[in-house]
Length: 156
Figure 1 (cartoon, helix red, strand yellow):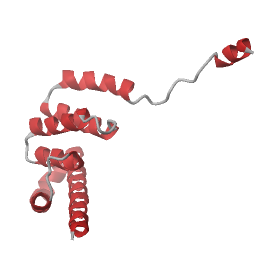
Figure 2 (tube, rainbow, N blue to C red):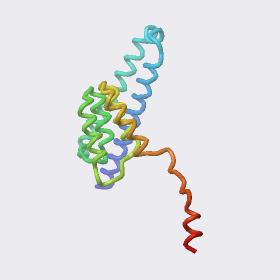
Figure 3 (spheres, rainbow, N blue to C red):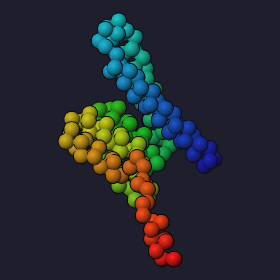
Figure 4 (cartoon, one colour):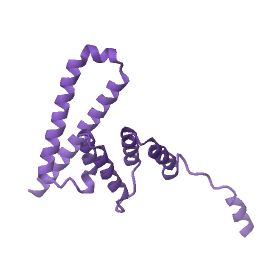
């Protein structure tokens, strides 16, 4: 019985992540399109986004019945939900708590979500600061060791 519950919770969690990803792609697409397209399809897109919002909310409420969403496993979905509801500060707090969690190493995706939230809130100075730290936390490549052969040869 417990494995079935865990499988249901995992399925609802994955569905919630997929719905949030679809929503973010739709929002980005709407932002990149001009007002010309929005004027032509305004009624259709608002109906589609309302339906999508309802699906996301229903899924989140159903998942809330089965698991504690405050646990770190479901933190990403909680942050998406808070952002979806317009509570950007709470979403930022959830992300910061996940990043500060000592149990697992920080993930680049969490920091990217944090940067996006900082931009949405309008805290450009913090966003700039965090972007600079991204190069330190996640370097594109590690520098090669130079001069190691010199130390090896001299010790022999």
